[in-house]
Amino acid sequence: MNRFKEEVLAAFHKEVLFTSHALHQMNLPERMITKQEVKETVLYGEIIEDYLHDIRGHSCLFMRAVSLNRIIHVVCSPKKDYLTIVSAYVPSSEKWESDWKTRKIL
Image (cartoon, rainbow, N blue to C red):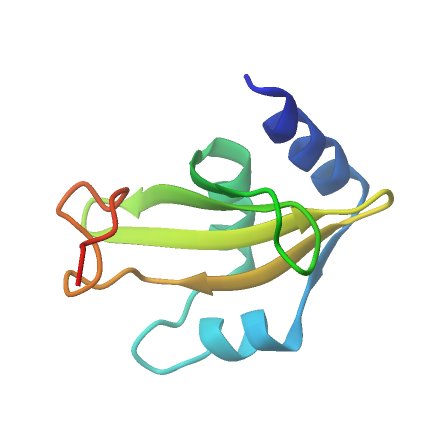
């Protein structure tokens, strides 16, 4: 496991905080992503993008298949005492390749 994922998981085990943006995205009718799905994505998912210079602080994008036909992407940023969930969404085939890990060049 890479060092940054260890940092994310350490923050996760302290406390998980959802931004209002993340909650809004999760509650869109076409998404309806649960907090449990987000937490499982962070715990068991794969980091597919690393945002070292994010304005909110070092963050990353996790991807996980939460069911046979449902992929979730979660953007999170670890802090000293908690993990911030910045956003969560179901990726679209318009923006992502079929592996759901690679952005399409538009």
